Image (tube, rainbow, N blue to C red; front, side, top):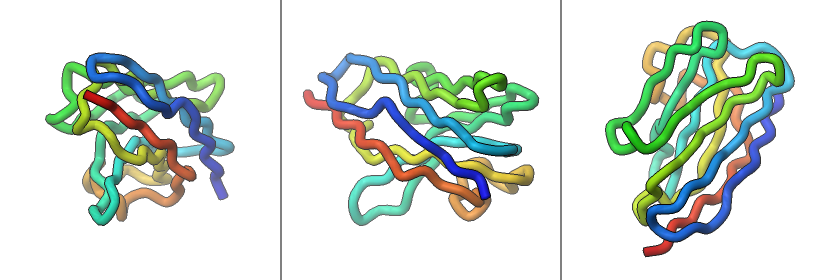
Length: 122
C-alpha cells in the first residue's frame, strides 16, 4: 500500500503561481497529477516517471506547468505558473506501479491522494 500526501493548494489571482507537492510512502513507477471539477471525470495534467525523469503534459498546461521530482524525498512537485481561472479544480496526485498504457488515464493508477483545491480568480 502506497500513501500519497499532497500539499500546496490555495487561492490565487490569474497570472499567479502555486506549487503542489506529493510525497509517496513507497515505490511508484509513474506519478501524475489529475484535476477534477464537480461533475466531471478527472483529467490528466502531467505525469513523470521518477526513475527516468521523463515527463508528459496536457496540451492546456504546456509551457505553464512543470512536473519534477526529488527522488531522495520520494516527492513529486507540480509548479504552476501563469494560472488561469480555467485551472480551478481539485488536484489529485496519483501513483502507478506499472508503466501506464496512457499516462492520462485514471484507470492506470493504483493509488490516489486526498486532493488539494486550487482556485484561480480573474
